Image (cartoon, rainbow, N blue to C red):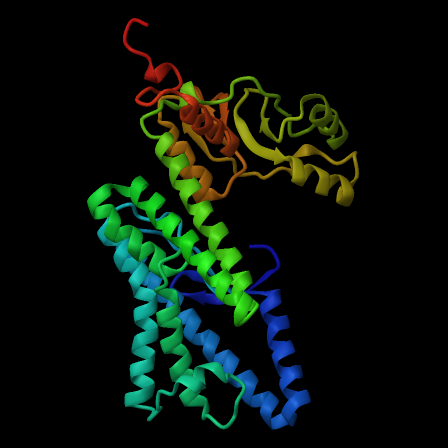
Length: 372
């Protein structure tokens, strides 16, 4: 994630802090200082740091549980709205997704129990609402907020943990794709409810509602893309007419190719036609600004371009697109030469074609009856 600073590594997972999080802490300190002086400001700052430490522990609850099922977890990022653990994939096995999703809120429940049993905290509803109210002790506020985080995250709407718990429970009966559709629809209903409440109570809920609605739609879309890619040979879905670039070419030549074709991602190949990288439209424009038109393509390209063999399935290419967050996946023949390209747009177009086809039929040569 851009605008993030690496602050260390815990058990193999890089911990990042987004710059907006640091600005948020500075704003909390300044606002508290103007209202109650230095003592209040430091109290609020210490409380927020401890709160986000609890958020980090919440995310590591997800991370360690995911690792138990063989899911890599490269990094976690702290944002003003909470933490985001990057899992390379979400397991489609309902039991595994349920345990990964529930692990985070359970961490907050355990923290609450420890603060009450060991730290002597008392749970008071007002303590969670008055984060900067020093009439409540720091430990009371921390216990109340951890319990609130556990309950809030169990709201049955993506991207909250409750949305994934709901999908896992539904998937055990109706399948992963249908369960996602139902869970996303419930999540969107929850978003409308939050927005309506926000109009009357707190405008912040409106922004949360928008975020939840978009996240639910995005989750349903991504699962639908993954479903339509299953069982499809990548050779039947890849783009075969595309322009390539050479590492030694100047960027101004790449610009001309961009203007002539309108292509978004350009594979970079060596003299034998084997992929050595990829240059996206955004990277090209950024390199032109920073390096000038005489710079080489090799200086601006993303060196690692994920590839799959031409005999694999489209689903494998789609997984690489997600896991590597790459603009494109190359398809190579038996000699390693680039023969095709798969992008997110490729799979999205397939899904639109599939939706337009009569029920029970499939778009593409893999869906034709034998002899047709």
